[in-house]
Structure formats: C-alpha cells, structure tokens
Length: 427
Image (tube, rainbow, N blue to C red; front, side, top):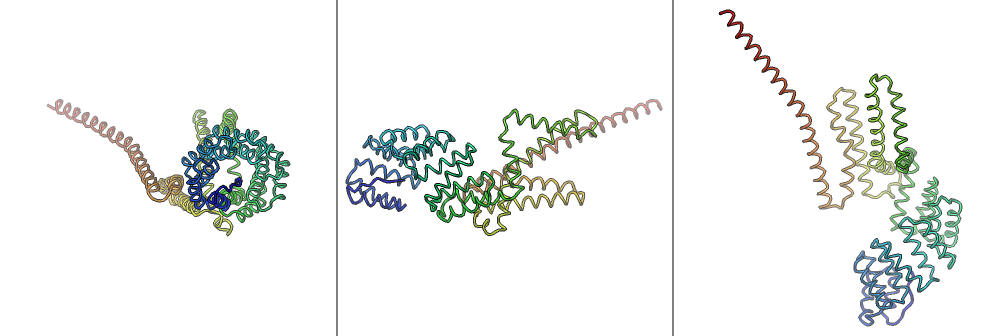
C-alpha cells in the first residue's frame, strides 16, 4: 500500500516511515501524537485506520476511515483506505462504492484500479476483475499487482497461454516479489505441473516466510504428486461440478449397470434395492473418505519426507496421525473379525472408522475450553448413539421375550384345560 508523503509535523513523517517498515504498533503511537496536533487531518485518520486494521481492530479501523473521509471528502486516499477497511468487514457494495469514489477523484491511479480488481476477484467476478486490472496496466504497465490479478483471472477463463505470458512478464520485471511466484505456482498446480509448483511455492516462502497461502499451496502441490490422492479429489470434484440432472443420470446409469450385474439375485425388487444401496454407499464412502481421511492421510505420507515435514503444520500433523491410527485400528479389527470369525469385533471397527471425522474436528478447535466443549459434545453424541443402539437391540429382544412368554402362557392354559377335561372324563 503506497503512502503519500506528508511532513506537516514530525510525528506524521515518523508514522509514515514506520508504516512502510511494517512497525504498525509504533506507527499507531506516532499517529495519536500527530492527531493531538492536527485532530482534523484526513491523512492521519486514514493512517490510523491502517494501523488499527493491522491488529484486527476492524470496527475501530472502520470508524477511523469514516472520520478520514468526513475530514476531507476530496481526499482520494481516504476513500481508498475506507474501501480497504470496508472490504475487510465483508461489505462488497460498500467497498466498491468507496473505491469508485477514489477513482472518480484520481482516475489515473493504478493502485486504485488494482484494488477494485482485487475486490471483484475476491467475490468471484473475474470478468470485472480482468477489466479493472487491464485498466491499471494501461496506466502503469509495470504494476505487478495488476499483472498477478490479470494472470489469475485468465486462468479462471482457461486462457493458459495468455495467463502464463502475463505472469512470466511480471516475474521478469521483479523476480523478488513473492506473490508473483505464488501466482506462477498456482497456475502450474492448476494445469498439472506439480514439480514446477513446488519450486515456485518454495521460492515464495523464501521471499516471505509468513505467507500462509504459499505454505498451503506447497502442501497441496506435494500431495497432488500422489496418484491416489489426485484421482480421488478429481473424482469428487467432477461429481460436485455436475448439475443435478447430470448427477442423476450418472447415478441411474450406475444403478442400471449394477442391477444387471446382480442378476443372480432372483427377486427383481431386492436386486434393485441392492443396486441403489451399493451406489449410495459407494458415493458416500468416497465422499467421507475424501473429506475426512484423504487429506489427513496425504499429510501423513508427507511426514516421511523432509520438505513435507517442514511444510505441514503441527496441527495438520496431529490430525494425520489420528486418522492413520484410527484407520489402522479399523483394518486390524475387521481382519480379526473375519479371520477369527468374531462378528462382534466389527462393531468397534465401525466406531474406529467413523472416529477421524469428529476427532479431527476437535483438534481443529482452539486449545482450552473450545476443544473441551467439542470433546464433551463428541462423547455425549457417542453415548447417545450407544443408548440408541442398545434400545434398538432391546426392543426386538423384549418383543421376542414377550411373545415367548405369551406363547408359553397360551400352551400352559391349553395344558391346564386338557388336564381339567381329562379329570372330568375320568370322574
């Protein structure tokens, strides 16, 4: 974010320099000192909003940005900061209105066109984002931010050649800008160049070790090298991308094929029910495995290589170990149930198979009370399931016992009646 030069008082200049050095806490203190001298300075209130936003005080930053606009409605930078803060508060219309006012006051500022493009891009409006980034590049062809957004928008439109040419030009202009390497890596990841994606994500992390998006991209690139992981997610993404009519046609085709394969089952109705059940179970199993187990298991595989261990976060490693242990226990219990003919052992195997979902949910919660409450919720849910299972098992057993007692009583009554008749006939 570029900052206009302003040396009206020494605190103002120090605040500007501190913001450029990313020392926002110190800059905030200097801004307050400067505001004691110039309380109606639009620029100072705008810089205060920047400092407040950096420590996630969004509401306070919004108030400071509004004050900056009120102090000088003709200050385009104040409207730009107001748009920036409003965008952080997830207000698309307000952010676009503010950046539109900034562009009305300063239509030749490429940074403003870039931020307008960024707003559109974040809300999935890639055509508008492409137009805004092109407008920024027309004003300043060397604007790296606009070039990055242009490449990302072209990638959304599957214009591979133009997207790659755009980002390569940006890298040639400034090879030390981390976001350009992230963009180049994301394009490589999108079109299957996994080794190239790993290389550029590593370079982005070298230039900016704090970039969480680059770390996540590196992990995803490493996992996408595994064929099984790649195939599972392609299958699930393909299925999710289908419209409801196409998804229904695919499901009906699968049911028809299975129905034909299950011809040994003589009853047509049972065969159809079995085919529908198998298709539903297969889709659910693939979805659950992909969502709850596929990602943690891929992270577990990465723990066996040095780069993967460094890239995967400690929290993701814990979840991967939990999932691997649960699935190993599941396989072991099912094998024991099959080889030793102990069907009851399959019940804890089902519990172990379902455990990664809730356990990973608990581990994703912040440590302390949130994680404790999540654990208590899970334990309560499991107890409720045990009680429900016991009740469902007890009801038929109790009914069977009642019928046995009723039948026994009926037979006893018949025996007594026969005995009475025998005694009467003997008399």
